[in-house]
Amino acid sequence: MWITAAEYFNKINADSRKYFEINENIYEITPDRIPIDFTKIFNKENSVLKFEIGFGNGESIIKLAKKNSDINYFGIDRKMDRVRTALAKLNKAEPIPNLKIARSGTDYIEEMISAGSFDEIIMNFPDPWPKKKHHKNRTINDDFVKIIHRLLKPEGIFRFASDHEEYSMEVLGVFQDSEIFESLYENGFKNEVKDRIQTQFEKHKTKAGLKIYHLKFRKKPLSS
Image 1 (tube, rainbow, N blue to C red):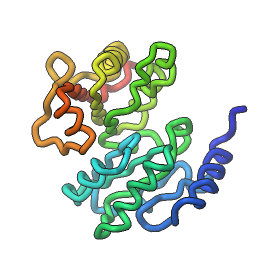
Image 2: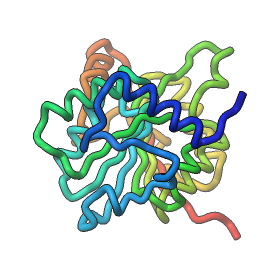
Image 3: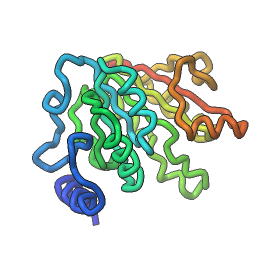
Image 4: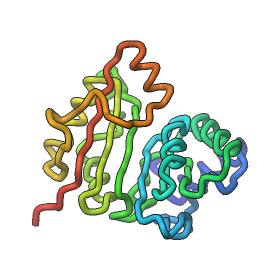
């Protein structure tokens, strides 16, 4: 049975508290905190806010936040083991005031986040659900592209990376067909991006001889 956003976050938070302590490194999304007011959880002097959907073990978003102290980063992941791994890294590190992570999936993302919140949205190596019968479980589809468009500021950027060619080309096609984004890469993708922070996962895939598909899109205004 479908549940409300309030029921979802109450359930996920009760479950989370069994496995980790809530502290300054993790933002607990509660019904009274949605939509999230990012001005209350981040340094107001930083005008740029970037959002990673599915931060995995946290390696990429932590490195990005450390490297770019003038940019605020917010990341979500629904899987408990990934959140615990990322939180353990943060708990051992020096404070990173421009980074907050939260446990959440994308089911209630439109209720959780106000329109026009982000300068950039990032998805690194989402589950490609390679079997055809499971393709319906892929996060990016026509409806989700519209959600990404809504969450981005004017001319905001969406970045995507995957080692799965078929899924990458599907994502490219969905964005191109949407007509509300423009690709910023010639031919639609790159296999290498200069100065990119590589995770251990990405390095492992590259070492194994797999190509990485990087996609980058800019938000276009909706046609009147």
